[in-house]
Structure formats: C-alpha cells, structure tokens
Length: 358
Image (cartoon, rainbow, N blue to C red; front, side, top):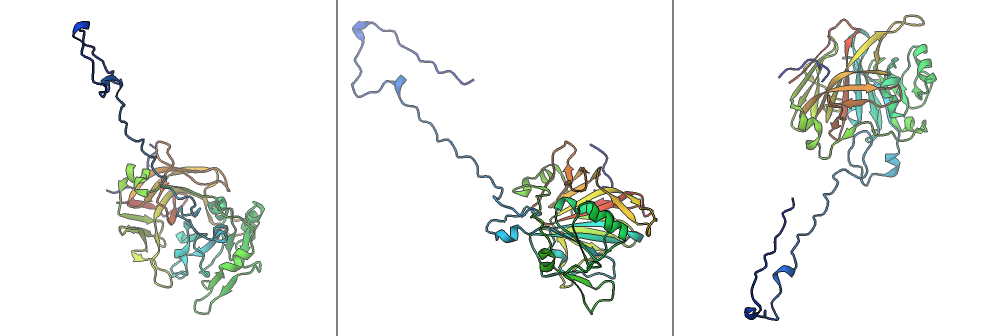
C-alpha cells in the first residue's frame, strides 16, 4: 500500500424453600448435620493486580530500562551536535550512538543532522558542521547545549540571545579537533568529555511517550503494517528505511548508510513531520532555508516497530516539546529505543519532496 500525505482525521437472587409439615411428623436432625441454609460459602481468592510492565527508571530520550544505571550517567545533559550529511561528509563517526536524530533540509537540498546524545556517550563524534537558524527550535526542548562549528554571526547571536547555550568551535570552545585523513571542511570532530565539562545543564526531560510492551502501543494496535519508508527531499537527499524484523535500517540513495566503522545506522522509530520552509533575509549574510517549527503544527507519520499511523504534530515554542497525536487526540506511543525525525518540506522549496510508506 502506498501512502503519500496525511489528510487531517442482577446478581441472581437465591431462594430458600421451606417444607411445611406437622409437628407430629417432624424428625429431629442429627446433631452432626449442618443446616444447608447456614453452610459457609466457598469464595475464590481475589487475584493480585497485574504488575506494571513499565520500568521504574528509564533513559529519558529512549524510554529504555535504566535500572542499575550509574547515577552520574543518568544525570548527563543532552548534547545536540550538528553533523554533516553531504556525500563528501559520509561516513560519519559514532552517529549510531545518538538517542534522537533530526534530519533537516538546508541549502541546495542537502540535509544536515542534529544528533542528540545522552544514554550512550561515545568518546568522539564527527563530522561537525555549522548551525542554522532552526536548530535552536529543533533541539530546544532537550535543554542541553547546541554544539557546532560556527554560523553566520546573526544566527549565532539570535541563538545565544534566545537563551540557548552554545558550544562553538569558531569561538575557541574546548573539545574540537581536526583529523588529517579527511579534507576540510569535513574533518572537524569533537571529544564528548570536553563538551560535557563545559555545561551545567541538567539531564533532559522525557520527550516522547513509550509503550511497554510496544506490541500493545496505539501505533501497533491501531496502525498499518509497513516494511519500507522512502523519502525524497532533493537529488542530494533521498533517505529510506527498511524494516528488518527488529529495527529500521537506514539507506542513502539506495545504499546502506553506514558510519566509519561499518555499522549501518538504524532506528526503532521513524517520525516524519511535514514542515514549512521559509528563506531568511539576505541582510547580514546569505539567505538560507529555515524549517519552521516553533509555534507551528502540521501532519505526518509515526512508524514504531513494523507499524505506522498518520499523526498531527505541534510545538508551542522553542523550548516546548513536540506533541505527536493520532487523529482521535491520543498521544502516540513509541517503541523504546532510538528515534529519527525526518523534517520533510511541504512548502517553500522547489524540489517537490515526497514520502511513500509501504
């Protein structure tokens, strides 16, 4: 089945019978016989309430059971890192460790990523590139620092003035380094311990609702089975996802999207949001496409496990969470695990993006 776009959607009473008889023929009952009307009633034991399958403690960005996790690890803030995704930038390093990844449309239809790390912190990540004006709105609800190489000064100033903490290579912040086996500008990497040491942010709040077990989620029970998600943003960005029976495996242009150690990228949930894109003013710098999220809403899809549903989404403001709901207003339940969010333009670009789910 091919899908392109969502359109908004007595207790029984016991009777005791007494036999009438004369006093002369009444027989005295044996002393050892109990009266039928006063015999004790056997009652079955009240069953214990079912155990709540939800873990007591979960990693906030994945919903995965965190019982026994180190308290210091649970307290790590969300690190939102701008990762390049052009053909020249791939393969990336340790992108598979991210809890949540957002894919955004930038100049010429190339995509860039905002990769958010918290539950699984690698030693290093890369390659790191520049920020765009929508990034503060994409990751604002995660409450940690935004980490990037640089940007037009007006975008940097707007981001910092909005209250969003930034860790920036161009400003001389610690943790960035360049490798010799990649050509510039695709050779900027970062050390996660240095990034963590520079922020006082707290652990992030939980972003999405999860089902335990996920087979009972409202996506599985009320959705449609799917095995493939094909997205076209432009000739430079055509990601796709194939369900392998356990996770969604990611492809770029029909080829496996793997990181530099050969691991193919994957997700447990793929969220597709139809978004509007507007170009910024060229005053003070070049005009760039900006994905509009804060104060906006729209439609989309959520694939959790091997099923998907059509949804509506909203985001009240920069630091407010994404609200994902089914047509009946029920909040969508994801599968505990990694989530990729595809921000697919529905207006403002000339490439006529499409989404096919089958």
